[in-house]
Image 1 (tube, rainbow, N blue to C red):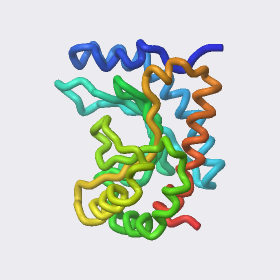
Image 2: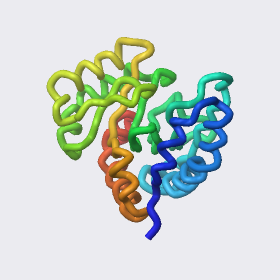
Image 3: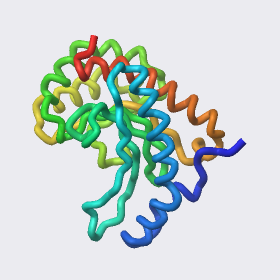
Length: 208
């Protein structure tokens, strides 16, 4: 059975120069994001009752620096995703990320942070290998199992109080682990991740 990921997918982010890296990204990785887009937009639409749309990163504003990561995002809005909580599947050179994110463009971060702060016990029910982060521009993240007492509350306070603050929760899969997985195994991993993230998403969007 074919594997979803190859080492060459991750090696794209080692290529020098914007034009060369973008060419490799478009040829090698983007078709996989397009495929995920179709699959998981339908998945989220059926799970939430809202029509979701895929948004594959285009990196169109870049003129000099090549992208260090890339992704497909999912949100219930056809024209964009950055202003609302959204799901992503993406790559850094070191790992795959499958996440739920609220980034700095979201206008209702204060309300989202307050709702999440009241439901922090939901995070304790999540799988032990989940991560959290306060910066979608960084590949670094923190194990959720170690972050319950101090880091999680502080990230939510920052989301509430700081204009540029962000909040990310999800799962990372190292490049070594990812290239070992068949398409079926990766789909199972991704779907399990999204299933665990949906209760958090429902709190974010104030859906009962």
